Image 1 (cartoon, one colour):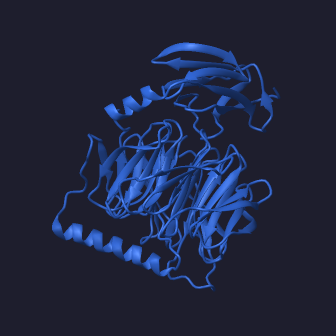
Image 2 (tube, rainbow, N blue to C red):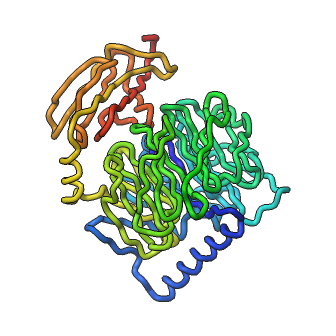
Image 3 (tube, rainbow, N blue to C red):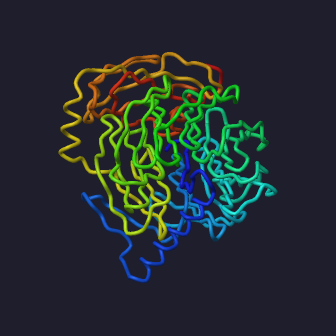
Length: 446
């Protein structure tokens, strides 16, 4: 994830489905404990490490610090996990009922929504703001009635909060921690934000609303074919693909034209939440009924790997810097190693014929365009092309490359605009023309 779209979603037409989902998870957890089932099992050679957090609900990654934030709804706790050691680094006590979590890797702020499945219209909702450097609670923001999910646009320093009871997406200014406005959508649960296009996607019922981040208005709303209401939405800012967990399938849309691209069977009946790794174009889907995580290749829209879990997954996020993925389950936090390359994936990669253009741009932290900054394209560790921003490289579709963007003089590389990743080298695989922007921190005007 990149600015993170937290997700575990008990959504349906009525809030009674929220109660059903929570009770089901509790039953699964109790049954597993009584039976003495081991923590996790693996299919397809996937390495898994578990962190003993207990049952956790949502997870979000800070790319800059390699810290992972996990909410525990029942205890009013947010755990901070060190991604380098997979250990609990800190425990933060917050307001009761923490649920959705999102991270702004640029400002090093963490946002936590507090969701009550029994809430009434008289409730005063809030989100907690955590200072990632302390780490400690920095502020509490009164938002709506019953905040559920949180998404962040780090480029605009805007935080988006879904509220199914208020039937709105609230917009919060990350600088002042003040609510700017509430956008009427419907009984909205899952949120996803694209910092490159400044679009916010909100799922409600069997529909997807697209919000313009500049005007805070709904641009369009279109139907998502699903027998049950959609749970979650996630965005790959590199490819501008939008993924919706639509129950029985994952629906893929073009973020520009809103055209339906594919309907993917993830191998389960209830795809619940989605996490996207824009660096390797992999999509992680957790399946609550099958107790598994399916990994979809975003370039082919084919399930690449299925990982079996003993405990039910509740949320998933990916670290674009390390390519690890994190799954919040009803027993622990599962850390998935980068997926192995299977023969199926190799065949699919080889069959992707033709070339596409990768354009690399640069701008400073104020948004001003910068020209003449060095960029290098590598393949298999060898530099294959060089240029100065703005520059375009020709890549073979479906093949893996590494792109590097460098600062110079008073301008140092800060992060990639789409993901917030502070590493100036990143893996990339494209199947269509793609544009990336490197953000440089300039001590003087460039």
